Amino acid sequence: MITVSKKAQKHFQSLLSKEPNGTQIRVFIINPGTVDAECGVAYCPEEEVEEVDIALKYDKFFIYVNKNIIPYLKNSEIDLVIDNLGSQLTLKAPYAKNNFSKNNFSKKSFSLEEKVNYFLNTEINPQLSMHGGKINLIGISDKGVATIQFSGGCNGCSMIGLTLKETVETKLLASFPEIKKIYDETDHLHGKHSFY
Image 1 (cartoon, helix red, strand yellow):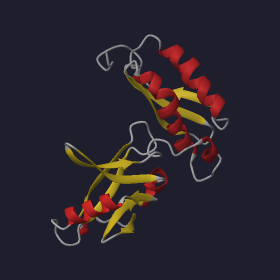
Image 2 (cartoon, helix red, strand yellow):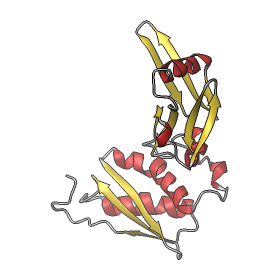
Image 3 (cartoon, rainbow, N blue to C red):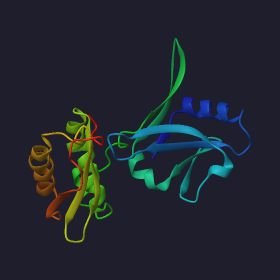
Image 4 (tube, rainbow, N blue to C red):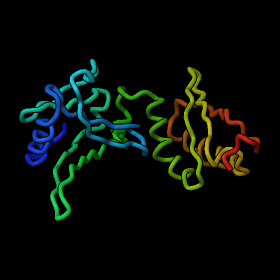
């Protein structure tokens, strides 16, 4: 799951030798599966190990990972890069932002809400972010009504009707036959709540 180079393993061993006994390493992802995903490596004291963690054994240390982010760590690599300026650990996680390939969409392990959130974060929000906006999925009813909410630059924008109909609604309905209707619960009146 996570390939750790020999140089990186020796570096971890050296770092951990200076920490309290029982301290290990944690690899984490903030906002996994979204364009905002951020990966990190940190110390993991014994008292911070959680029930949802799995332990990956390496040479004289463990890396703890929350089992819920395992799909996002596929083909991950940790290396130690050494140059004239010093050394730096690097973590490459190619699936941190995208583990929902089109082939994976057919798998039943991903809920409709997860698929729609991923779609919004990869297909819609990058376009909206150019104008300071974003769209969030609030929920999907049993009758196939997807409730969304705009934020940022979309709030109070005069083009919101066009964005909703031609960009969001058209793409969501075409991509997800389970969704029958889109409901926008944003207060679009320009005022103090508006972003701009």
